[in-house]
Image 1 (spheres, rainbow, N blue to C red):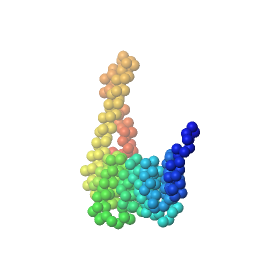
Image 2 (image 1 turned 180 degrees about the vertical axis):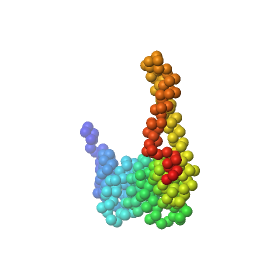
Image 3 (image 1 turned 60 degrees about the vertical axis):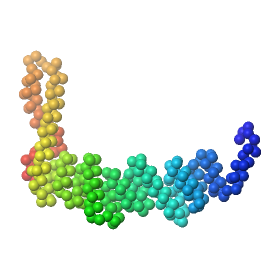
Image 4 (image 1 turned 90 degrees about the vertical axis):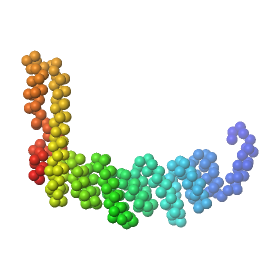
Length: 276
């Protein structure tokens, strides 16, 4: 106002004076860009100011300010639930599915909470609990959700958790064993197959996967040793030819190093797993 005629602001002051206290404070805070205080005044201004509070809350991401003030007002339960739902949708868009699920759960929206938690690999147990508590899904629908969750865990690399979902919620031993072999958990896969009285899965699923991993590890190690031999070629004594290193020295070193390339003990082999 410095250097300006204060009378220019007379119409504005008259407009503000005609408003209720909370609405007046809300308008002033908006002008001063104090958006958090504007949301607070709008929320506390009653039902009639909720639309304004929601607009500023969404525009500036001030969901928690609204929630904090609404919690102190027992008669505003519907608006509190709406604010929580908007906040959950906001954090879900940012990829924070676990937080979104917890907020939906706080808002007593278990279906939405379960959907969000399903997208967070670390929260699959909570998601399944909510699906069971919801009680609105048929057995077929629930099993379909569980298959989707297991597949998501599998794609995300958590094959042990995927196997648990397949076993506990889908009763699918085949997929559980397949998931464990994908995660290089051959011993556990053989144990699960034997315990479920599906010993046929050991020679048809577990052993081929282990043999394939052994072959791939051998090829990878052989390629690495070949590159090492080539890099050392210039420093070799004249009497030690490169072909001697590649065809005689390296093959002798290969078998002891193979167990380092796969996640089973050195004493384990495909035959050993088959006899579990």
